[in-house]
Length: 228
Ligand SMILES: O=C(CO)[C@H](O)[C@H](O)COP(=O)(O)O
Ligand SMILES: [Fe+2]
Image 1 (cartoon, rainbow, N blue to C red):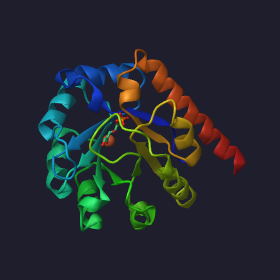
Image 2 (cartoon, rainbow, N blue to C red):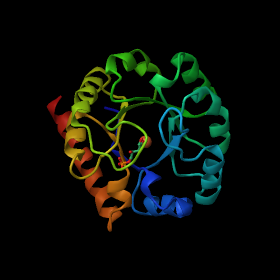
Image 3 (cartoon, rainbow, N blue to C red):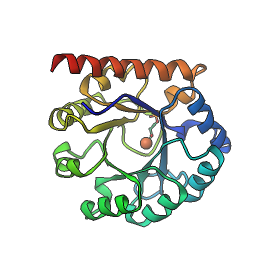
Image 4 (cartoon, helix red, strand yellow):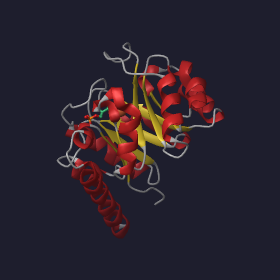
């Protein structure tokens, strides 16, 4: 079992005029990585930021924090090199956004980034499976991508369970509506990379929320290894 519990706050719901400071605040509160949501107004009905912002964040908060770029964009091929140059650590693209996932995976690796592959709620996990051996992380969306603060879709959990059963050492991320109320379901299903936006960022005590989420996942991983 090669995977470990990691919590990656999404700063989508934070004060975007203070994004660098918000990223630092999340790292100071115990975040393992930062999940940065890129939206192009085409793949999803919302716009956030692109590689120029990532470059500024990298300069401002230093070389260490791991940037997981959640690329909710229509032509993910277009931004691989700019994102790598800007300092992105992992490029997580949507399966629905490309006709040639294999080539894109290769390009991302050649650019020096890790590879994440995301599926929207309407996409089956069987469609992702052929690529699972070539990626670092699978992202199972637990809301329709586009906005923070939506309700967690519990009916996505069978996808996570199936992936965990088929790919025991793959990093599996969940994203959307994840917080203290839904983390148990995610952890039991086998997710180990947890994106949490509003539940962490809007909390009066983000450190405690991050610690709670992480402990639940650590306990589920320990239980899973004892059951084997
Ligand atoms: O990709 C996303 C939305 O498309 C965000 O990462 C996600 O929604 C996180 O925010 P919250 O935890 O508030 O749902
Ligand atoms: Fe996201």
